[in-house]
Amino acid sequence: MGKLEHIQTLTKHVGRVWNVAWHPKGEHLASCGEDKTIRIWAKEGSKWVCKAILTDGHKRTIREIAWSPCGNYLASASFDATTSIWDKRSGEFECNTTLEGHENEVKGVAWSRSGQFMATCSRDKSVWVWEVADDDEYECAAVLNAHTQDVKKVVWHPCEDLLASASYDNTIKLFREDKSDNDWICVATLESHDSTVWSISFDKTGSHLVSGSDDKTVKIWKEYKPDNSDGIPTIGNESTWKCVCTLSGYHTRTVYDVNWCKLTGLIATACGDDIVRIFKEEENDDPNAPTYTLVNSAEKSHGQDVNCVTWNPKIPGLLASCSDDGEIKLWNFVE
Amino acid sequence: MELENVNPNIYSKIDDRLITLEEEDDDVEDEFDAREIFDLIRGITDPEHPLTLEELHVLEESLIEVDNKDNIVKVLYTPTIPHCSMATLIGLSIRVKLLRCLPARFKVTVEINPGTHVSENSVNKQLADKERVAAALENVHLIKVINQCISTK
Image 1 (cartoon, rainbow over the protein chains, first blue to last red):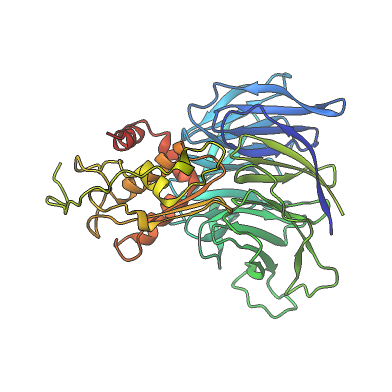
Image 2: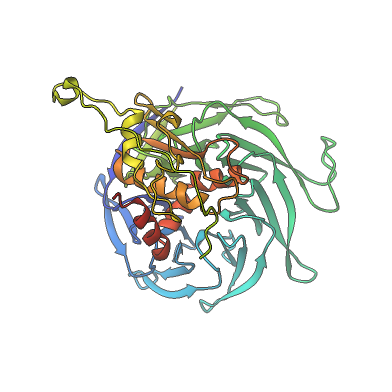
């Protein structure tokens, strides 16, 4: 049994905090929420303090933020239907680019591993892929209308330019570029959840995906490549993604976020029952039917719904979470 | 605008709550009960009629559940007609009123009384989606309508 040790609570936001995101170097944390501001936090001595407040970027709630892989840019997605790009190369954060195109609330934003692409998703049911040119130009490479309801979250594969999206239509979809005609196509639809899929996260290698849903379950999906030794059928050159594990009976309300640690392999979940849970895969389990166990005691982590959990990319066990109660909490998971 | 339900049934209001001596005693902790929740929302008005949700029997005390231990409040409401296009707006008004009145510890669920609306599942799903609710509440036009409905007479 492990333990989630509370390190510090960061209280500066007014109202609901929707999202927290670690800088790729792990030394800065960005947060955003209902108060339409972005805060940048860093460690001073032994304490985390607010280093910068980015205001005037958005007219409505800021739903999600994402650092570019190079760490020089921060993208913010807002209910005001725009996505802003903040440039910190000068030392100060400057908002030089605002991307328009979505009809209404932008709910998610994510950069591809290569930094060549960025994706956004919206209540308008579409996913947009933006191609990032060298001179800070962002061109719309594709508008993907595969989902039938609003799209809650987009994430990129950790190594390839493969995009995954989660939706209110209860499905997860995977997209990639068809190199023959530069068209982005939907290559897989993952169906198994009974309600809105709020969040998804790839594991370190990108061969597994975890999803969290309003149906109170967390599911693990495994990639089966063409000609796999397990005899799972595939179509054409595309992989088949299969749900190999469903974690039910743990979460008592909606699962709002899931995050797979690239360092430790631990999965953290954020739930509407105010609890942050940590799951670990059993050793020597069957890869086609893996077993994940809850490894922390399910105690109240926040005063209200937990909206987001994210593992630090450099320091194993360091976790950030945020809540409707306006607080951000830092935790250290020890086994 | 044409009214969907021109001639709704109107029911009488229930009497005011009788305050017991124990409730007046500050040393006794009064937990939330269904009647208290009902009193908070019974005065919300229908977007179509100058009538309250109590008078239209959209809200009834018997369809409210309170669990003080687990901090759960569940309200079922009954649209006046099964294809009422205002069902989502009415549900949203109930949700907003409770959001503003109740302590944040409560998890509030507002759903349609099963079997009383043709789009029951889709309305329930929308009302349960806090992101959609949050976005709706930032909509200046919509919040104006909701504020009108919940400004108790």
